[in-house]
Image 1 (cartoon, chains in turn green, yellow):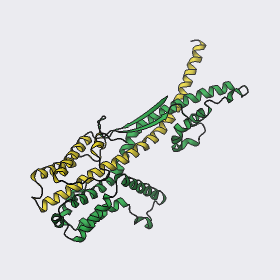
Image 2: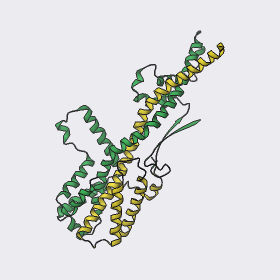
Image 3: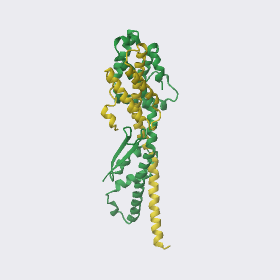
Image 4: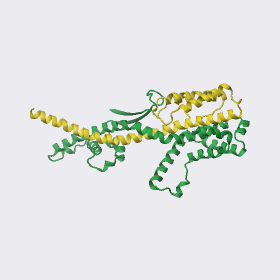
Length: 227
Length: 140
């Protein structure tokens, strides 16, 4: 029997609409619990405790199909009650795990969303400004960005971001995020060697800002971009 | 109460205790893993939504700048569409992922954007911009 677990996270409250995000976990019911709970075990801080329910779940799975109780001398009854205990603990664990995931998934979604939305927004601004400018006729381009040097810089920036797909940008973002969080953990006090090391995505935005800074025709629209 | 009933009760209670024991631990672990799974999905969605909104913001910024230096460059109709897009973008609750208006506003933004691009005869989409078919069915 195949049991499919579905975690639903809402983006906006219209469930049937486009923005509903569904996370699916497909696992075989009755499959080895080590597989089912392996990840949870790794994350669990109590994994070293031999009496934890997850360990029962594991033991239970390993014992499935084993016939060593026949070989034991006399305490098969005790073993049997232990086995039944494990079964109930396992079922409880599994259902508790799903209920817990269901209860916290939306929370986690909102947290993640807020962590990444402004990084995406800034990249989007670079895409929009350089892209829209690129499509204007030359005479307008010249009136907006007066010097050839500026126009060249904006063109280069457009090339750079245009060759970067959203999924690649997301990978960069993930890398930068894990790096900054590990830097924070290792060096609670900012280290002078790390400060200059900015993220690639952030640099695109900063470069755009520096080009536009003294370009009055475009600069006016930058204030409005701050959200 | 006879002794058989007692035994039965205690057996059921014991099962419930075991079930509860497992459930509590599972729930605690589920809270942790569910939050992390959700966060990962949120990171992706937040980035993509932010990127799309920033993209519109950047385009509108440039279009408005162009209108300022040359008021006759865009037709009245396009100018009206641009200012409508601007209003939609201001209304978008970017920091409220559960707000129910987001999907409607995003739909309207995409329609307006596509209409403006078609009128101006420009192709502005980037690699990762939601395709028309994706808009109907976004899956992760």
